[in-house]
Length: 169
Ligand code: RP5
Image 1 (cartoon, helix red, strand yellow):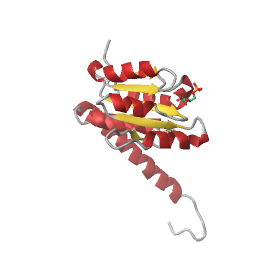
Image 2: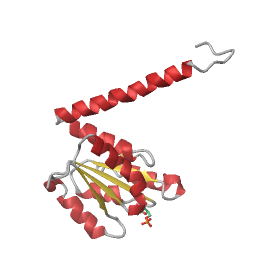
Image 3: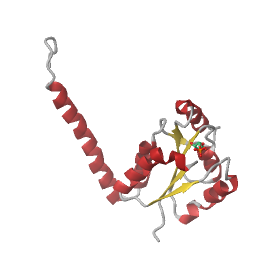
Image 4: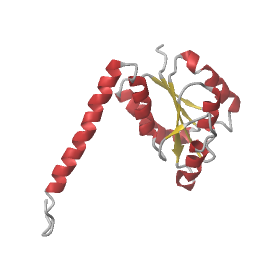
């Protein structure tokens, strides 16, 4: 079996509707990934085992999403040498609790934190990290990025067609 380059970890399958966006993006970029449910509070030993072994299994970047008192990304970052991208999930308190839990790491143990429910951005960042040493992936990413720009060109075209007496463009 092909070894994954990215691990997508979530605290619960209730996180899947958001975390699926990371999987969708990685899949579209043809990046091999795995998806696992692990909980810092409910399965701490399994989290430690995962974090200890991830690098030796060939994983390069870990994306970890969790809600509430979201210790998962920080605990993983405390154990693995790999870059960890944390996704605060809006399970409670509109995700403010998870955002602060994930972003406010002590000096020396960083978690690159996305916005609340920012799973897609986590995958985009993971892709950009991997693309540093993968020219074909870098090209796929550049192509996707160019399409993003075209959306704004179209948006400006659409806005230009809205007429107001006092609108000048
Ligand atoms: C966190 O608690 C999970 O990441 C999830 O966002 C939240 C609620 O989990 P469930 O009770 O739905 O399993 O650990």
